[in-house]
Image 1 (tube, rainbow, N blue to C red):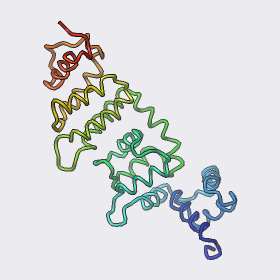
Image 2 (cartoon, rainbow, N blue to C red):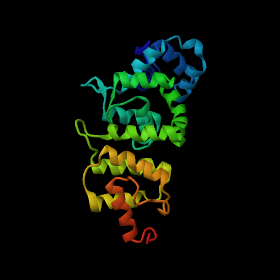
Image 3 (cartoon, one colour):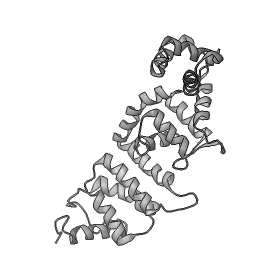
Image 4 (cartoon, rainbow, N blue to C red):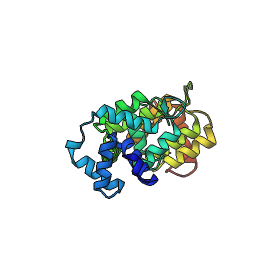
Length: 252
C-alpha cells in the first residue's frame, strides 16, 4: 500500500505510527479520512476507540523508539528536544521538570526506557496528544505545597552532574530562578547575586533544602527573621548582605 504514496504522505504515515503506536493500516485509514492532515488524523484516531485495538505498552514502546538515541538505549538531549517539539513546549519550561519528576528520572536531559515508559504509564497516557492534554494539570501540581516541596527536592539530585555530591552554582541559580518564578519569591535575584559575589562555590543539599524553609517561613522584609534561629551560615550571611545593601530595612 505504501508504494503508491508520495514521499510526503509516506513521511506522515511513519510519523503517525511513531506517535500513536498504530499499525500502518490504521495510520492510512485515519490519514485518508482526514485528507492527509496529521492533526485531523490524530483527532479521528483518538476519538474512535474501536480502531485502537493496540495495547498501551506497544504505543509506549513505539513512542520510546521515536525519541531514543541511535547509539545508546536512552533518550538523550536530541530526543528530549524532539519530545518538546512534539509537545509544543520549550525545553526550559518548568513543566519538563514536573514530567521528569513523574518519570523518576535520575539525571537531567536523560530518560531511560524504564523511566520514560513507567512515567507515562503512571500518568495514564500513551500518546503525545494525551500527554499534551495533561500538561496544564502537571503545571498545576506546582501550586500544591506538598508536591512543590517534593519537586524542589527532586530537582537537586536531578540537576547534579553524575558522581557529584553538591550542585554546581550556575545550575543551582538556573534551577532557583525556574522554581521561584512559580513561587514568586521577590528576593530570588538578590539571592543569586549574593551567591555569585560572596559564595561562588557549589551548593550543598542542606543549603538547597533550607532555602525553601526560609522562603516559606520568612517574609520578604525579614520582619520575622530570628538571628538566633538555626539557619545555615549562608542564609545568615544573605540576611546581612540584604541589610548592608539597603534591600531590606535595617534590623537595629
